[in-house]
Amino acid sequence: MLQEFWHAIRVSGLIGIGLLALTLMLLAGSIVILSSARSRGPIVVLLVLAFLPLLVGFLGTSLGLCEVETVCAAAGERSDPAIAAEGRRQAWSTTYLGAGATGLLVLVNLAALALGSGGAKRA
Image 1 (cartoon, helix red, strand yellow):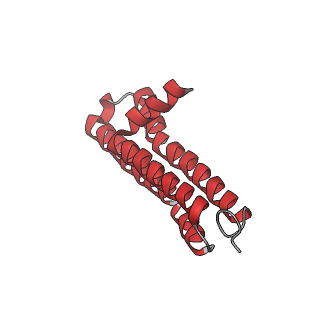
Image 2: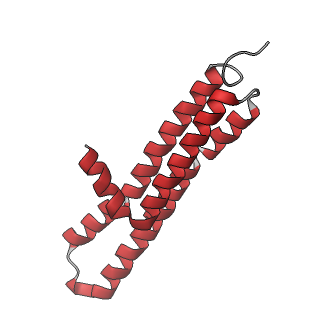
């Protein structure tokens, strides 16, 4: 499974690496807010920002699909439908990565909201 994850990152290129970096930064921020926030405001902001990886994933997929269509149009009749289908399948890997990252971030931030106003209750 880890091998498939790294393959998806490799296939998605710079957008996938940026997506991974964005996710790690948001996850670190969420954990810091989880342990130290005194109000729900920062948690809600991070909950909204948790959907950023999904948007970046959609952007990467749309760019990948445009690239596949451009190559297929340039090849004309010589283009192989199986290769085009594989290119389209690989283009969707960025969205899958973004959806997984968004799911993880939403779960962490919902856990923070469920624990109260962030961190331990203060007197």
